[in-house]
Image (cartoon, rainbow, N blue to C red):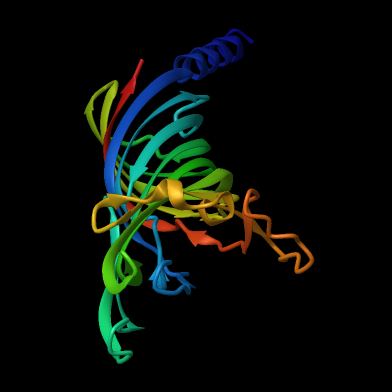
Amino acid sequence: MRILMTAVALLATTTLSAQDFYFNPVAGYGIKAPGEITLTGDASSPSVDNLNLGGGLNVGVSGGFLFNDVFGIEARLNYQNNLGYQNVNSITYQDPNSGQPISGEQITTFNASSIRLAPLLFFRMDEDVSPYAKVGPIIQYTMLSVVTESPQPTLVNNTPTVVTLETETRLNNGISMGALGEAGMMFEVDSDIFLNAGVAFSALQVAPNSATIVRYEENNQDQLDDLSVSEKETEFVRNIDNNSSNEPDEPSQGLKDWLNFSSFSLRVGVVVIL
């Protein structure tokens, strides 16, 4: 009986000592995952093939709790920036003087960054060098702007000419949800310090709710105030109401597009058990 009680006490002490908080700063770089989409547009809006905004630099920090030597839970806060995704299209427009078709280039730059919160389950082996895995949902707030530069036929002092049109549009994306999985290896440096390296896959799409033009320049001259509300603001809907009034002082309507933010990321970090 005394032996049994001693064994139970040792087991309880081992379990209690394995219950520890840990801290895990990480950094990495992501590449876009399959599942790209196509946006179509005209001379003043982007037409983009194979658009994916999920790659780029990412840094974050996790805090977690180990229930035992092999299982825990954690919350990760992560910042991601795609470092600008540029797309160049060839476009054709009509020369305002001769009426002949002219070829030009439309340059579109997507500047995307996001803040992600991910509650994760954490599994590992209790070894000096041990594999680990993490899985859980993603809650993402996305900041996205689209800068477009293209030639634009117009009238300047009643004279037909071609100007360089530059616009910047900011999209309101709200909160999006996806999923995250990560697998890698942990290397013990000290009893409470580990290095970790892994590959993470995140599956996420974002559907903007609205867009607002915040910069509209012709040959570097600000023309934003010349635009009506319907020209500057767009609300994205699943079905366009053909009976809407399209008043100039009201936002126009556009169809919702899903933007792909899925990616594979290489991550390295340090796990410190507190």
